[in-house]
Image 1 (cartoon, rainbow, N blue to C red):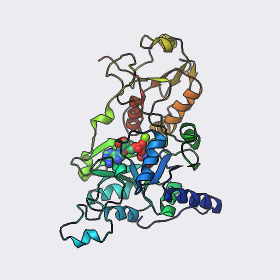
Image 2 (spheres, rainbow, N blue to C red):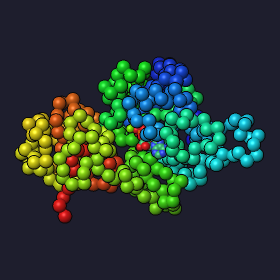
Image 3 (cartoon, rainbow, N blue to C red):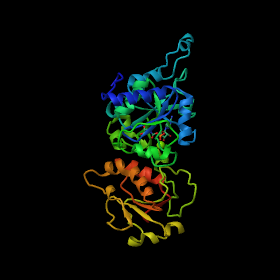
Image 4 (cartoon, rainbow, N blue to C red):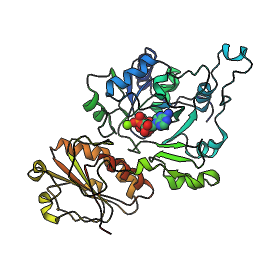
Length: 379
Ligand code: TXA
Ligand code: MG
């Protein structure tokens, strides 16, 4: 997948994408679909463009952004910036030598294009990326998405696109154009509607420049699939921070302003570890862990495998765990389901946890960061 390609042949779609590419070249941001979640993209080489993303999302500017490209060739253009001043000084060569580090070969040929993000050395000289993209980090994050619209935008604009998820900071990531509209209405000039996202959870972020390699964020590619590549990848570890709860590691009532709260609906989330029954069964509403507000509030249930029907007032059956299509289906539906329960006016959502294997690791990572309370089994 070396040279840029354009996979869009419908003339009307192509015209719309050309308009979007014009906006991007003017330093504006545009929301677009990827296979994982909707992204809010801007020219990664323009500080004005990148800063417009942070402003629209109200995202803290110390959280770095992923750079999206349409081809390996476009990525090499970032790693080997062509500027004559870098060749006049005999010592001044970029530490990365302009090539994608070999350690990534197996990963790239197996999972790109797709829901995988890799960390790369930032060129030490004449980096074309705006410093706002990396927010002071020594490496930058890159992804070659599989969604034809995402790739077409990079191709038509001839720009690498910095793009975080297109939600308001802290909310569940958007998996449809209407989610973007809800969060960023009036804050961005254009949303491209490509229908619902097929993966539904963000990409897996991997740092292969460390030994052992580290998964910084579990996502659309499972850690098991990465380890199966063998070699250095067989030893891949998962960063501890990605396994932490937003809530206290015990059954404690919600405290406002939790440090790591992300992906959160308006309602409070009570997450039950895999195999933990819902507290108080049919009297869930009177669960002792809930605050006064939630005691009298409307309850939503996200039930996946073993919890019975009808344990709460509102059950989203669509998250029901199907044995042959389990974690994947839950991952695809998770963020939309949290938003749908908010639309129902639910005050508290009780979520049945799943096993932290395959897609379940990313699902539980997002839920831990959304949860106000995590209910664990007493050993
Ligand atoms: O699937 C995805 O990755 C989506 C779509 C739009 O591509 N994007 C996305 O971006 O989820 P965002 O900004 O919501 O999450 C980016 C993640 C964050 O956890 C961030 O800390 C990490 O990647 N990241 C980005 N650049 C990094 C860097 N230079 N060093 C370490 N971590 C980085
Ligand atoms: Mg995000």
